Length: 292
Image (tube, rainbow, N blue to C red; front, side):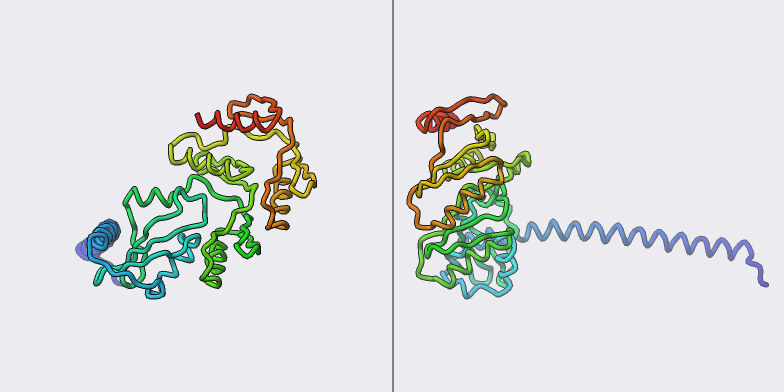
């Protein structure tokens, strides 16, 4: 058996050390390069959006958008539909969109795409705020469509069902109506709130825009009852029972009146205090005081 001398051992050790050092240096350079490319990519998107915004544009059909835009419209933009498309020649597309997702702070906003159909990463705070959400709906939720049919969304991906309905009914301009009551989860603290009607929804959205406490000013202490327009009584003993009210509206899409809350009721304010409200006038006054 051959025995390595000191010189050969030292040479092999040096070679191994060099190899390890080269590997570590390569890994560092690769990581740094990847981070740099990510930052440069973000800067490139911002620059391209600015160029599209300032360039002369022509209006084109939404059917002219590259097919790869479907990735965005089946993902984060699943709740949105296109209202206008502008092409900046040699640069990309500016697309005006609207949404039926009332969790969004604004119903209208703009998004941008490359000529190949990749959605550009928009860092503009004003535009980003329009699409920001301060709460998420608890699914399922229901919409009554203009033809009085009902579409139930069981997950966020199902927003495309609303868009598909309008694609099949292109002459319809009336928008879908969200069926109340609905539960929402506030992004601020993860709490669940039940919105009884559109007034509750408007109040939450106003607080979002104003940067105020997003929680409802007060909630109903259960059980409560509702008298529906057909004189039937629905008793709500726990939060899940609010779906009984929603089911009534789904079964009666032509109803023009709202169910009425039967008084007196107890309400619990944010600070934990409980008060008794005797009639609708006092209830409306309590809701109004929350806005002050």
